[in-house]
Length: 343
Image (cartoon, rainbow, N blue to C red):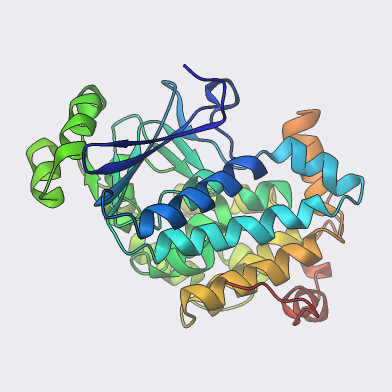
């Protein structure tokens, strides 16, 4: 296998993208973003390419996110490459969302963060029983970006807000229920499915031949409770509402939320409520405003240190309490930029 981070080929009717950093769980780098953008631009007008398939090397992960350690180092150093990463990544997410041909993601394993951004916006999101989906950004002082502003509010009820705030992990059945996935296929059938898709004229018919029942969606059982908990109030009110519950599942949600960055929680709640009424492009511009201010604050760097670098799991958030996150502080993350994102 090549040592290139991302591979491209035309196979049959398909343009094939292969994420090729298995030792790094296929974390997305700036180089990968640039190469994928250029290749998709070319394939969009290439008559030989009728559809695009994106897959990954390795048995554990489709992509566990962005190259967070590199971003951490760049951000600490004040390197402009930190924000340039997002200035390039978000237009790629938009390109995938608006791609004029079927875009088929074969997700066999972990998919989080930046990996979600290069898969979930495609027309077909096929997952296996090995799927582990999460948007865990609030736990490291970030927010659910790469289009989370758009797709999370469009999950059933308020389940997307729950997922964005808590970083809860989903298996295949719940991914189908929320609309994050479109089909479930057994992992053992992925290789044969891929070969069939390369030559397929009828994409939907081809996938249907392999589709399998994923089991019941456990999240469905909690949808009414989630809507009641997250339907109104600020984040402090929501957490306090959870903490007064007698339901063990709800108390678990409260405990999870208390571990997250208070600032990230407040930002995320506002972000996802706003995203329900925005176009995809407007969502991406909003995300760039937020991440530009994240770069100037401390929680991302402290959260990444605690969870990813030192792994002591003891981040010291600034501020440390939800009640100390003011409306004015949250407003500052959403204010217009002098140099807005172009998508």
